[in-house]
Amino acid sequence: AQSVTQLGSHVSVSEGALVLLRCNYSSSVPPYLFWYVQYPNQGLQLLLKYTTGATLVKGINGFEAEFKKSETSFHLTKPSAHMSDAAEYFCAVSMNRDDKIIFGKGTRLHILP
Amino acid sequence: GAVVSQHPSRVICKSGTSVKIECRSLDFQATTMFWYRQFPKQSLMLMATSNEGSKATYEQGVEKDKFLINHASLTLSTLTVTSAHPEDSSFYICSARGFGLSGEQYFGPGTRLTVT
Image 1: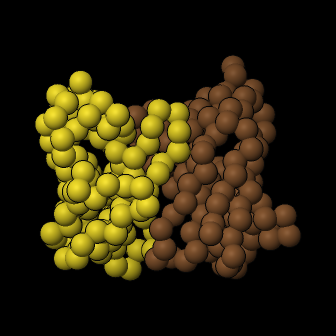
Image 2 (image 1 turned 60 degrees about the horizontal axis):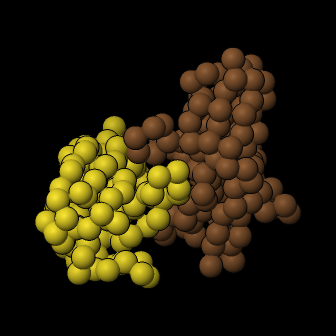
């Protein structure tokens, strides 16, 4: 079975500071990994995904994530936080491109002025 | 491209009535659609997976007679909550996956259901 653990249900960073949202996964097969963002009362938007190949994945809005197999991690980072980054972020995993996606519990990112 | 819409965005219904939520892929054909529910400040829980023209596959613990899913065309799936109760109040989100989209799921904006 696959699962995702997001460390920290709430993370606060100052505007302009580094954003780091942590995600660890469990999978019996090489995973497909995703980060989604959700703004209040809206659906999910894909930030980035890892399938195969390069372990450092760049996404939209300046976000990137690195797949580290040895640490079973897929942490999301952004060098400089912006007020518009305040949202809920979900890490997710699936077995392959056609499989269902399993979501973590989410991390709410707060940006402090 | 790859836009998914949901209708209605919000609905309030009385306990005991049924409500239908539509999910449409606007610019691609969705071979598979997924239905999720999300309780306040919680994650998305997959309810069921539907493939066009076949019966939906429900996740463990989801009552298929209560949450009726129909995927009659490649652009439309519907979720009907039958005999709704206040505990069914939730945010329902659909996603769709189509041909040649690298397996990516595209999410709708969600439907807020409130049962009074």
